[in-house]
Each structure stands twice: as structure tokens, then as C-alpha cells.
Image 1 (spheres, rainbow, N blue to C red):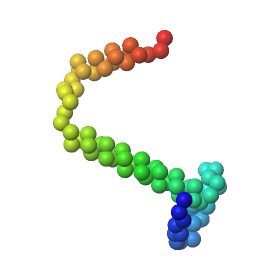
Image 2 (tube, helix red, strand yellow):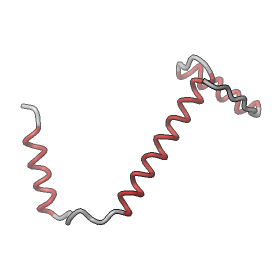
Image 3 (cartoon, rainbow, N blue to C red):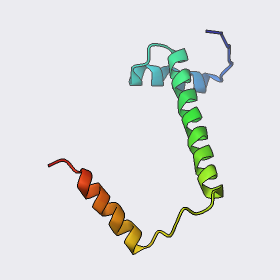
Image 4 (cartoon, one colour):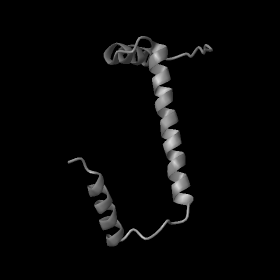
Amino acid sequence: MSTMNISLPESQRSFVDQQVADRGFVSCSEYIRDLIRKEQDVENFRSLLLAGANSPPAGVADAEYFEELRARVRQHEAP
């Protein structure tokens, strides 16, 4: 794992330290890695949304479509 040093104003450093203490992180590095993973998830989700928005429609989402969808869900519900 490589190392990266960052500079923070005291107010941000205090915030990070408080988050580490309050949320049970082992270290500031663990907290920052968690923030980065969450941002990566947001970026991935945004990419998926854009890909979906740019794709051609798969069909009509009318009342019949939703009724068929509900029927499929009911078939897979646990007894």
C-alpha cells in the first residue's frame, strides 16, 4: 500500500479525528479510505445511470408492464 500525506486545516483535522472516534474507525487512514470507496460507488452509480439514460427504451412501462412485474414478484415470494 502506498502512502499519501495530506494537509488539513485544524478544523478539518478535528472533524476527521472526531469521525474516527465516533464511528469506530481504527485510524484516520481507514476513515479516508472509507470516504474514497463511497465516492467511487457514487461515481459508478452515476455512470450506470448515464448509461441507462443514453440507452434506447427497452419497452413501454405501462399498467400491463407493472402488473406483469407484480405477478413475477408474487411468484417468488416466500410462503
